[in-house]
Length: 187
Image (cartoon, rainbow, N blue to C red; front, top):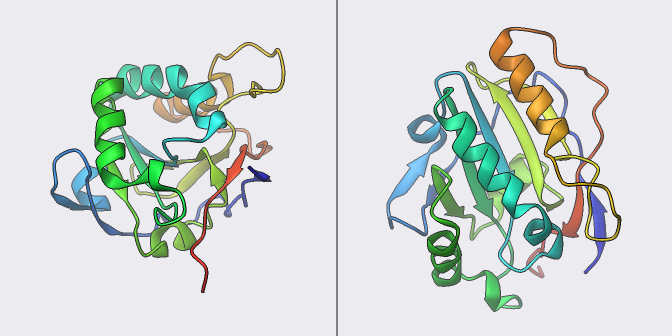
């Protein structure tokens, strides 16, 4: 596990489109199929990352709480499943079943092209886009990690979501997410 910080794409960047299979339904979706009316969370996660497992309760709670407010949550895994079989699509589906299917989709980025387009670097890597799919937040869920005693609240992402929904400015001073590096395929 290599502890890695997110790359922090520029605020205002438009969310890259994609066409990826959903491991839960077996259907292929593009960003336009899944985006929320008022905003969209795109997050890169994986099944085995201790950072993702540490924050899963808040990821699930936020996805459920903000869905009714017009925010869609899309999860994507781009890990190399040859070398990390716990992240394979069948295991992704099993994980979503265990978590109660809280996200609009849990997509598999086999080519890793979508992760590269988003400049994703770690799991979890979290992005929030407004209704026009412009990036308004990219960063951590909150200050909690598996290695500290900071309470897990989702405060940073929740503040961005609440400001977006209220039409208020989101603080541009954002702290990168931190987690395991994305498991890139060897060239």
